[in-house]
Image 1 (cartoon, rainbow, N blue to C red):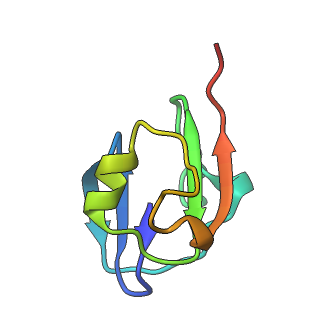
Image 2: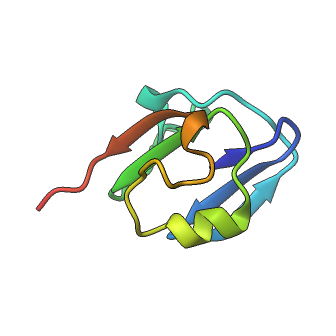
Length: 87
């Protein structure tokens, strides 16, 4: 997800799949939870990146299948990085 304070964009494998004119805080423990429904996301989450800034779509696409490291253009703005992949 990427939010610029006005629009929130949802990405799946580096491809933008949804955009809405809404801004909201991202709470790591609530990823996949929808308060307006009785169900939650039923899939697997491999990785979650929470940024202090909007990340350009091109950067998201380029880094979609790479681990974050200091060469990432927004490295200093990452707030949380959850690598949930299991072997």
